[in-house]
Amino acid sequence: MDGEESSFEIKAIGKFKVNLFGEKNIANAASVIVLLHRLGFKPEAVAHAILGFYGAKRRFERVYYKNNIYLYDDYAHHPNEIVSTIEAARLRFKGRRIVIIFQPHTYSRTAFLLKEFTESLSKADLTLILPIFASARETKYEFKITSSDIVNGAKTGNLRQFKNSKELLDRLRTILRRGDVVFTMGAGDVYKLGEKIIKIIQSK
Image (cartoon, rainbow, N blue to C red; front, side):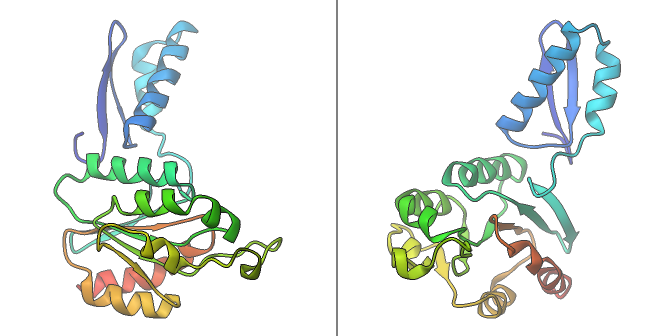
């Protein structure tokens, strides 16, 4: 890791940098480089091209930075994706506090993967959880589950559930500190909180 880039070397091909973080992103980039090498592209040309790739929208997408606080947005809505994003953040931001603002997506997914959600979200330093973003095809009465169930199963005390976004943002305003790395995370509309979070960051 070096500043805003990840550096790595592929034996017999060369050294490369990408504007992405995490083992999976680097592994994917390395696979593309190897393929292009086999197709006859020169390593220098590939290195130049791949450095210009900043990843897919809503995948570890940098939204804002000020007062030594980062804000990212990520589409992760499955426990495995959540773990991957947190691990990538740990690799990129060693020693910083990782704060997740998570919006569960669909009652069915939350019910079926409840234990996994609790375990994955507990890997952040602090996770603030919004109400479940419902799908048009289901209702909470079918599954009898809420965001509180994710928190209730936690063995650590770093998960918090909120009744609405206003309550969550009010809490974020009091606990956010310089050095934090904040993620809005989920497949619903949690990303829409970005502008309000930016104002909180600006006030620090």
